[in-house]
Structures are given as C-alpha cells and as structure tokens.
Length: 164
Image (cartoon, rainbow, N blue to C red):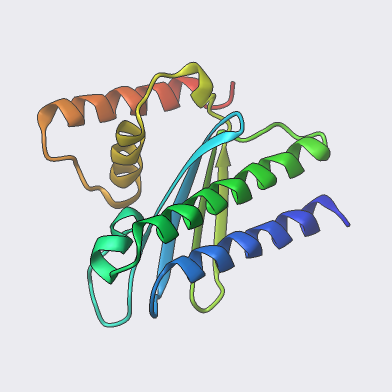
C-alpha cells in the first residue's frame, strides 16, 4: 500500500472515531493534534445541525451526559490514532509532524494540514496550546490578559520554528 493510501486510511479511522465520540448528529469538526514524541494532545470543536454554537470536545461529558471514564478512554484511543499516523510518516521515511489539523464535514469533505513544529522543545501547557489554536482557527481570544500574552508567546514560537 502506498504512503498516500495509508494516510487516507488513517484519516478515515480518525474521522470515524471522532464521529463516534460525538453523541448525536454533527455537521463540522475542527481538530488539532499536538505531538510531543509519542505523547499527544488532541482537541476538537464541532458544530451540530441548526445551532450556531461551537462545541468543545472536553465538554462532551457535561453537555451530552457521557460518562467521563468512557469519554477519557475514547480520548486516549484518539491520541493513539495520531501516534499511529506519525508512525506511518516514520515508516515511509518522512519527518514526523508536530501539529496536524484535520477539518471534516458530515458530507465527507476533508482538509488536512501539517506543521513541523518541535513541541518537545517547548514548555507550553495544554491550555496555552488550546488558546493558541482557538485564536488561530476561530479568532477567539482568551478571557484574561495573561492568557492573551501567553497566546502571543506561542504564536511567536510557531512563527520562529516553522520550516526548521
């Protein structure tokens, strides 16, 4: 199987798993995975039909009555799927990615992008990367000034490390 075929197969596994994590109908998913070796942070947002609201994946247990344990197991599996995606890159002699953004719709539209940022060399917290992604993707600023300042530090780090 070719590199591209393996990637497409893995993208489908990831999208299907995320779809299974969302209880009920959905329309669009916006997902980011930050890789630090074989440990990852994966977050996603999604929309549902007939609502203008953007739902955050970590709120699924609270917003939709899903058990935290069951949800946590699914998050770990999602991280494993991104570790598997990075392993495909290694197997085919490609550089491991630092960030993967995967946006898809219920109609099957898919957009995937990669950045080769070395998150292992940074000390950014999950919340700082969350704030950075939410701002970059949706233009949503954090509530407090110190969080905004931290977001700009992450933004600067990304700009300085792109293409290295």
